[in-house]
Length: 342
Image (cartoon, rainbow, N blue to C red; front, side):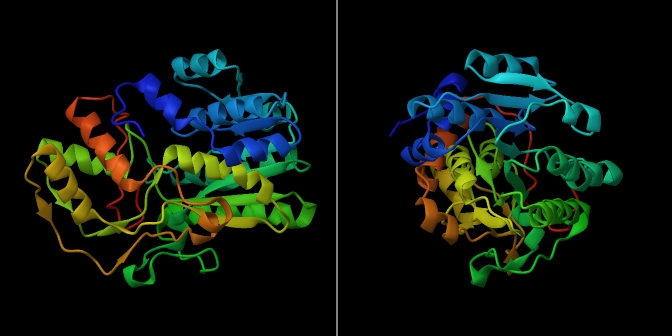
């Protein structure tokens, strides 16, 4: 295992390295792969991993990225790795209908941050758009990203929500995300579209994520609120690997899968670990609440195995990255938020 990750190019290579399981899945999978909402934080990793895994499996297929690509560098980087890119306003039915058909669809579109004050747009993106996609790709296999926020706060003593727990969303974002799930579920049932819904909590890499938020605050000497006292995280590369392998789980009715790491982490303890690695005092404020937004991903681990990158490895890499002034996306996760307002 690498002692450190020193630059963005190396980071993106590590993130997109396919597991043997992904190579096997994509080797057995028929047809092209199209990724909707490909320009976000996780999209490029997923696309590059899908392309590499397909190549290693000896399968010739189109891997297509669809987005408006507000950052031209992202689009150019994908093209440099053999991935086709298409620009599309996904809220425009005509533009969606003009997209190429593909046997495999990964839906990564969602609106979370900025949803407070833009509730109508939040619902349009999170709940209306899935219907347009299900119309276009009713004969495809679909894996759709969702969020563990749909469960709401659950007692820490339960160890995280499982797939069979009833949703209890708080706020417009989580409620509209549940709406997204229901739309995909409806079309899966009514049209037989094989679907898998991924409830993710929380992906991490060096430039963003809960662990990065904590590390940056420790390094800057800022207070760390531990009211949301516990959290689950998973290395982004492992989350993407599980998502690509979930294509083989797509079914009708839709298959629901939690994706996160196996640990229930203490925010206080993680902050203290960063303090030791960075030789910084840790300023803790607040008192841990008895509940938190937590996922239990035992089903995913039983199906696909444990993540390849451990929490301890992530903490060490991130501490080194932050202390060296490594690039940040400047997008805090707001994991501390308990009222559902993002």
